[in-house]
Image (tube, rainbow, N blue to C red):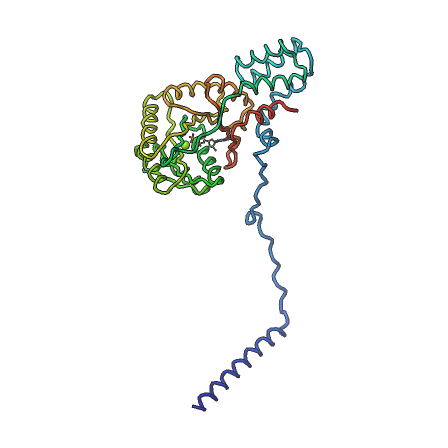
Length: 349
Ligand SMILES: Nc1nc2c(ncn2[C@@H]2O[C@H](COP(=O)(O)OP(=O)(O)O)[C@@H](O)[C@H]2O)c(=O)[nH]1
Ligand SMILES: [Mg+2]
């Protein structure tokens, strides 16, 4: 027994001795070669977040509407007091070029002739445009007790429905709401794939089906899942084949009926329009309005047009409030439409 202990102690001492010796030798060993130079990391390995403008303050809204604001440059340069014929001609040209529409342009000219512009032409025009944007534009997002709020998104292909759903999912997520997205555009598998990316980025839940599946059943399943999980909102994407196909409009009506049954309660039907298509957007809109009970407009791509005045024409001619505007392709590039910010962005110095 004691022999075993002695052997163990000897082995332990030898091990300690060997370790100490190695450390000492390592410390003493001179550097034989200079350490290789450290190559700088290539830039792509250290991606830097591009600084993003803060979109929720007024100057950023103004920056995104830069092209539209540019159209109003000449108008902002006009003085105060009585408004002469030359000035009226300038105002008329600017307003028509910005696409506010004939009716609003006439209203502005009448007001300038009648009241002049004691605080400057730009201020007077701003007042008339602002007054024309006076509809309530709150969105409804709280369903009745025990039901699930559903927002439907309708509009022709390419206007920005899917992107808008992604942006709104982010917005609602940030406000602590749980969102289920229904991939109701089942014509192309790519549409659901695109939504899967957005759902990933925003933490929303996605309900999808195979290509060609019945959109109504996708929306039905999404409402069921939302109810089971206690989610706050269902955003239902829809296909956007041509609005003049009665088939599409019938299908939208059917999706709506399904969405509004059982626990589902449709609170908003948002018609998405592309601002860069100008007056074309208006004729598309009329077809949808005839078939769907549209509660609000989402006007996308305002960043990509100099004819931002079309917001005014759309509200006036359709009689439906613009509730959100898209000002870029990024996840934060959707703003609740604020008429004060909008007219200031175009007309304030
Ligand atoms: N510049 C800009 N592009 C947008 C905006 N909204 C959507 N888009 C782009 O428009 C294209 C079509 O959008 P998508 O959501 O697929 O349209 P959908 O067919 O209606 O679902 C995409 O390239 C989007 O990035 C916006 O507000 N500004
Ligand atoms: Mg889409």
